[in-house]
Amino acid sequence: MPREFPHLLPDDLKVWKRFLAFMGDEYTHFDYDVRVGYGRDPGTDYPGNIRAMALDLSQRRIDAVGHRPDRLDIIELTRSAGLTAVGQLLSYPILYGHMFNPSIPVVPLLVCEEIQSDIEQPLTDLHIPYILV
Image (cartoon, rainbow, N blue to C red; front, side, top):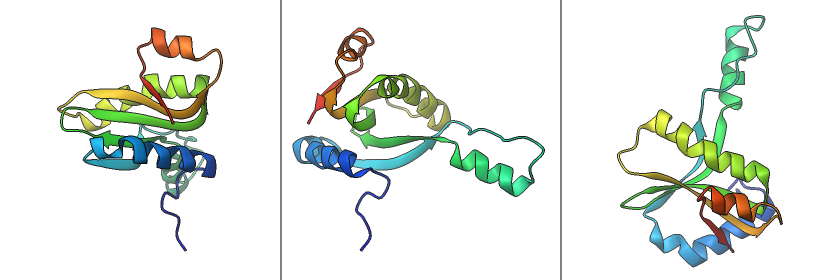
């Protein structure tokens, strides 16, 4: 039986399902596992097909892009949010904007079960919204 959201880890899937139950109706739809950036080229020592696969597999992936009529939410989804999530939420909207050139605002959104004790202040100071579910 195929999984409903195969790109999500089991703990993240539980968080995502709670978020969808709580706020899913605010979105027209979601795109999942959205590739942004250009990937990392292993170099000319490798054949073209291997280089192409490496570039493809090393692209960054946004967990979800939530489409609203007036904006796009770049959603980072995790059970326990730490510095990695902060870095992704700073970078992904920029990369998304360069890749897709959207006509409406692109904003970061953290969806998590808990925020590690020293991360709430950076989120607040950087104006990164979050939802605890």
